[in-house]
Length: 339
Image (cartoon, rainbow, N blue to C red; front, side, top):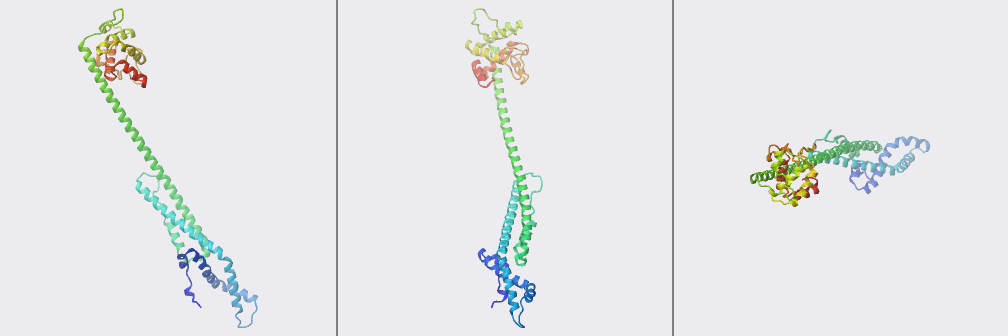
């Protein structure tokens, strides 16, 4: 006969394989319940079964009743143990997940509203309490398991909330970085455009200076003599027709033939209608060539605001430096909408 000290404890059962755990637990439970229920069942059994004096029948009767009672509850108790084991595993996984997320938040070093750490101490205390099942009556396990599940739910909810706030902060940072990248690209493009504009202006000014120094004029191909640029300036005729005639006379100064005149007429018809007072309120461009700003034309003459010829001279210099010819400028205008 084995002594009571050789019976497996609950700690032994927890460390055993699941199969052996199912085998050992009912045996230990049978012994424990038998010791606890003997007093309760004994009186009833004694009254119900009369025996002779000194007979061991009442004891045997009590043992039979206890054995039947425990055997009928063996399977539900096994299910209780399994539910507790599953709840402990889920709680441990939640603690690990919360700790990992807290580390991710710390590593991200992003501004996050609210708490940036998850308190898992209460859940870890409940896990530790349920792991020491040697001192816990089995009938108390369902209630303790429910409380462990509630604590697990709280940690999981806090984890989900913190993860959402971390993802929102990461998305905000990504959006800010994208906006900064686009702003840098736009600034670089604006700088490049400004540089190109400055180069074109310098070329136009150089061409205008060269034209003034040469003092030559091209003869008109029309049957009637055309007014020269100086004649237009002296008479103050700033009409579109006079400005076009002056432009035609200047083509040769830039090395162009009359084949370029049609492109020039089309280009400045589109830009200003050859109106020396044309002003674009949206961009600030001014005059026949729509110089931006109009003060650029001062390089061709101080009367750039009132003299169509001065504007034409500057505009031809600009076209020469930037596009090479009026037809080149017209092709660009048709392609992108501006020149």
